[in-house]
Image (cartoon, rainbow, N blue to C red; front, side, top):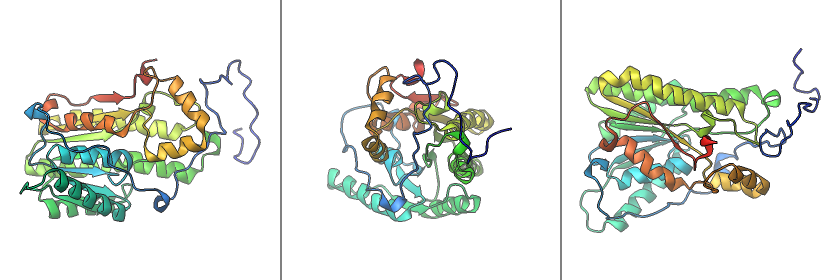
Length: 318
């Protein structure tokens, strides 16, 4: 029989099971902090005027980014604005989304003094795990912007429990946000693009966790959820190719977001274990995703679909 959650679990007896860096540690538990206790995410860089290929431009497009009010989502939203796109930030915390939308526009004005045409940056509420909420958010974006050309599904979260003690309701929520939310937004935007008979690009934010097992923190449901996102991107890329809708996946490695810094401040030994397994010897920065997401949404990648672009410092190679 499987042990109940309240029963003691015997220590592993397999030789090497307690390896320093190559196994999970059930004592590594983490839950995301309460939303309103998180600090604002800072911007990472300003505009630039260096020459680059015209195919990287997102001018005259409307891009939706879920989970865009904080962390990686906010940095990618900034990249899209810098590349010429109008942006709709969709987040569970609409107030934070509105705050960051105003900041993005203010920054753009400061760095483009005298420019007459300004980007349209809006904020919208959505619970990514709720179909009605997702559909309402998409309808609101269409009302504000008139169309949607691109989608980035960045809404998601991770937490750490060993599988036997993982609260079932938390596991369901992990899957609902990471997998259901990605699917619901992708289908909603694809329907709009097909009705418009317009090409489009969808980028799903997966994780290297969809291809490997992270150590030492146990997070089996999250790993499985991100593997599902990667396969979903590949499957929809084939399904929607006849409609000229491209679907790709970005799988980040360990990124130093505000939330990750908070975890490492509380568990400094974790950073040593993580970086010891990264060939480049360092964690990534949120701005490392600015180029990849711009590339995959733009015409620079117009023959790329179903790809999984890993931005992980080589972690998944060894």
